[in-house]
Amino acid sequence: MKTVLTGDRPSGNLHIGHYVGSLKKRVDMQNSGQYEIFVMIADLQALTDKADRFQKSPDAVFEVMLDYLAVGLDPRKVNFVLQSGIPAIFELPMYYANLVTQARLERNPTVKSEISDKKFGRSVPVGFVFYPISQAADITAFGAHLVPVGNDQMPMIEQAREIAADFNRIYGETLVMPDGLLSEDKRSQRLIGTDGGAKMGKSLGNCIYIKDSAAELRTKVMSMYTDPTHIHATDPGKVEGNVVFAYLDVFCDDTHFAKFFPEYKNLDELKSHYRRGGLGDVKIKNFLYAVLDEFLAPMRSRRAEYQKNKATVMAFLAKGTAAGVKKTNEVLARVRKAIGITS
Ligand code: TRP
Image 1 (tube, protein in one colour):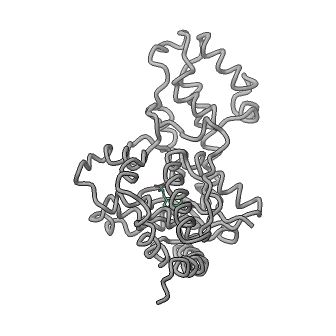
Image 2 (cartoon, protein in one colour; image 1 turned 60 degrees about the vertical axis):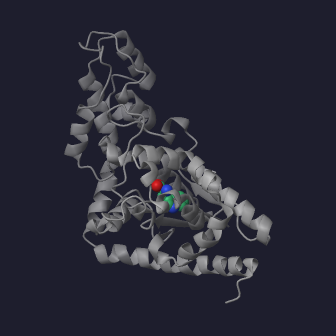
């Protein structure tokens, strides 16, 4: 059975971009029954760019757990693990760091763009530049064959593969070579923001969260950017670059039309009417709202149930973490032996 590892930093609630980019894949994999799955809350990684603010959000881990459970991840089918509870992840980077050059770390495209986004310059914490090594430890400690991620994480997988290959070459075949797994649908690998920005991002204020209430969802959909030249309903409108259509492309299917918008058979018909002119933004927004609300409503209610049971939720995490400790300690023992550490 193949082992799967994925993770998220507990740095805010998960949004529908996470869902289409990665969470949906995890749920599908879980339901296929073909994998041993570990889903990690990367609380140590969250320290790498905010050492001082970390303690200020004591519920961050609980919040991510609630989002996981809301989207349908099932504690009977996956192991939820807390990164800081896995000792092997503290030790492996000490070995891996010797296999990676400074230049290679600085070339990592994800790290590079994050350093520039966060305006770190030369004051970048060593721990931040180091995090691809730590993430390689996350992945290899679990012997993960597959790592479902969004495409911004592919450079991390690439770096983990290099580390695994170098380790195996130097010390003998020890680590499993991981593969990244992108969502098959190109459109949904990266969902644009509600503002039309290239990326839905927690720090960008352009997200629809899994936990958003119906009222919050409505406000966000109604204020979406459409086509600035489509001023009157009678004007011809552009579908390309139009946020409402970008989301409809990802989230709606023909059954939604039958249910919420029977004037049209499918998205192609709706798009051609919009292009022709005579279709107002409020109508397409109302439709998108109905589609997204139907998608989020069951998640919202599952979340609300679990929210009342914090002890139960945290017990899921403790149980998964214990399974993770067992698994990773086996890998760690093999790593120590391969290097020749006998203590
Ligand atoms: N870097 C990932 C993110 O920011 C989180 C993460 C940490 C991760 N460790 C991982 C993802 C291991 C996949 C596998 O979202």
